[in-house]
Image (cartoon, rainbow, N blue to C red; front, side, top):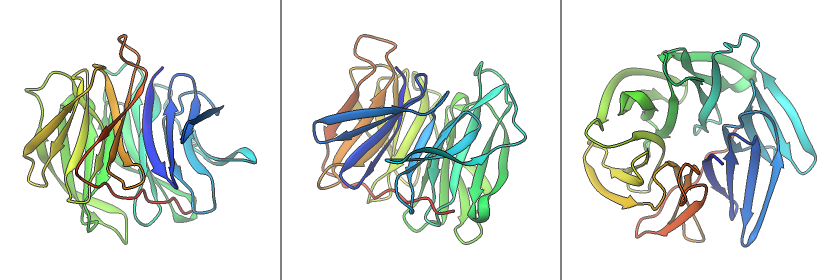
Length: 263
């Protein structure tokens, strides 16, 4: 199991199992899942209902009615697969690709915009991963895992353009690499450290101000949820006996709601 991409929406936790191609739903004690396709990498709530899911080389609408294709990428590099993705406040779906061998910079970051306009935003990426925006949507945060850095861009919400990349925090001194991340209501990032068995909290100035240790070494991603948005859900991979679970940790800090996709 490679659990990833957790999203809390309408009292439900959603996440994917990338390798099994499944979308999982956890509402209360009821756990269900549906097979979507190869390498299901991310999901987001859809304004029209249901979810938008990235898998294979397509974006899919997953709902109670079934699975249908929203958009298929025509020019696809078979050295890559989709990885982490997330919608911004305007409903655009940002999603990256990663090199299947995790060695070469063949990946990129893309965005599916209104009118189903698909465009490349960054290239020369090896393992495209975590995405987040600051609270006033003037900055976008981004991870290319092998760099062991969290990058910050100036972000234009109205146009969906990014510029002026800089390093927010360098994590080369840590064991493991940064993977998925989320942001809280105070504007701090929570970053899962894959291979490090923890989640770190990073200030808007790039200061590491706290950490939560996880029994599983391969923590993959995080999101806030629960009735008061103070539960941190942490997905993991089953590379060790404590992996392949979703962990829940109560915090004193509230998260923020996920944005819905709108095409």
